Image 1 (cartoon, chains in turn blue, red, orange, yellow):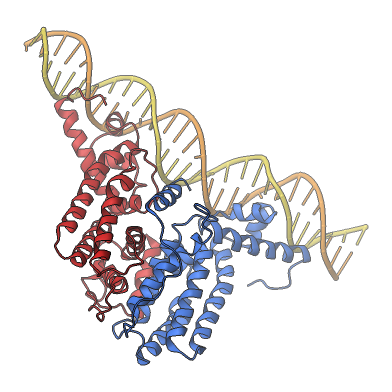
Image 2 (image 1 turned 45 degrees about the vertical axis):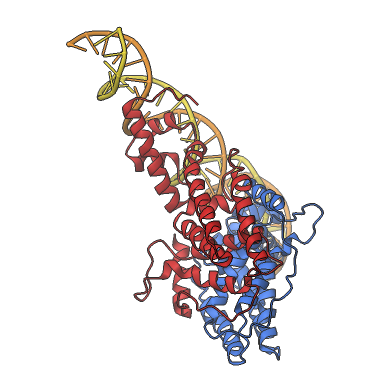
Length: 222
Length: 222
DNA sequence: CACGTACCGGATAGACCGCATCCATTTGTA
DNA sequence: TACAAATGGATGCGGTCTATCCGGTACGTG
């Protein structure tokens, strides 16, 4: 890296670009343009391209922070005494992040981008997820035939459900639409439990046929 | 419609276009070009545009057949004596269709296209799904708090998981990769059951961390 | 069988979009 | 002050998708 202290204004613009990038990638996903980011950051396109040679480079820079966040969630989950509670905490928090941030969801689902320096998925996150699953299995709370990779794929599915709901959508005065995916998380959790001690109460009410239709319809226009 | 009997060659080309469209939309999704379809059908672009004024029109024509197929699956499921078995049959078959056909999966998920004549989702399919769920609830096999719309959203999630696996992918000699999503279907099914009579045995083996990584990596290049 | 017309094919025009560069101008700092 | 560093955005390039146009072809009716 050419890290020989940036000029004051340059450093400030770099921060602005990172912030705008986080914001824009979160909302519109990874195919937002670097030009978009520049405009959104209030700087010229040229400035953006001087700071980050390509869009990928910007994404990589943003990614580091977000992987740290996910790793923190995992370590916190592992620190929870009860193995099942830890598992639930991880899934809830991780999915909350991905529901809010389309960009990171796309990356964790293996879509869109192919940035070389992100073997972190295997190297940093995956072992922790595996450990979380292993611990829950050993404690007899997670069914024996489920592994850490299953948790990954389940997250991919649940994230897809959460993307079904447009950004700040409400429907018939329902404010909990953004949490709809949690219904299905909890159904999945009941399916993941070893001891089938009944069913959990689902955190969000189901949608009516009309509401579902409106939602999916609305989605086509975005 | 100008249905005053097409000339023989025109009719033949229309069929070719429909077949090519089905094939291409299934494999590459709905953003395949009408020019692509024409080329794939072995006819000129002009021919394609004479037959179908726009891509949407072609999609609509194809859609009719596929909705019929889905409706047939639903009716078959409703005809199964055991309510739970019917539910399982529906989900298995419907997801199999969507796993094979990216185009219809995109439409059922409310993505991509906004074709006006397809309120069929609410009008033809949704009531049947609802009936299926209602029947299973009444029979005491489906948990009380789950509705037909929940089945829709679950399918969206599971379809997303199935799209994780590239077309004819194998990994370490595993031939069942295309069925990976069924693991998660069965986890979901266990979560949907009212009587928690233990856990089902999952139909496909879990992936290792390395296999998962390879899969998601590979996906980025498509 | 001959003629008109519906049809064919594909080159091509036109619109749009994303990426990246270049350079005249401004700003920071030694 | 002076000069290197940084700025901004107009601009060029290459790609994609949509859709049309028109010289040539083949169907099928009289």
